[in-house]
Amino acid sequence: MKLILLFILFFSFSRASTLNNEFLSPNLESTFQESKSIFYKSGNLSIKGFSGKGSIQIYSIIGNKLIDLNTQNLSEFNLQIDLEKNNMYIVRILSNNNIKTFKIIVD
Image 1 (spheres, helix red, strand yellow):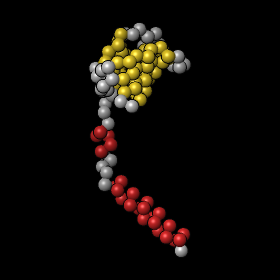
Image 2: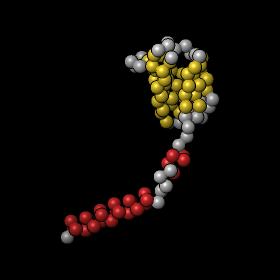
Image 3: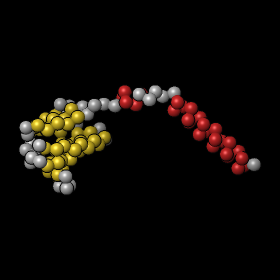
Image 4: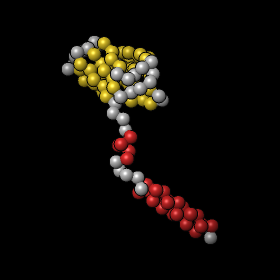
């Protein structure tokens, strides 16, 4: 009898959680995503879409840390840095307890 009650309780709970998800619009999640971008051109690294203070780390593709920089303002951040051409780098941005990782290729 207990087993049947547990099964009914489990089934009704899983059905209720499924119904709640049906009311969400599929585009609702993408509406709240912010556009974060990073560009490297002519020795200038530009970071857009972030706010507040944070940390910027740049790694070579094999994992060597090249730069670890703390900043008070990440919005419209620009950094003059010479990176070797024909190489790939990983840029890691830590802000407001969020971590975003980008891959850049320097032509």
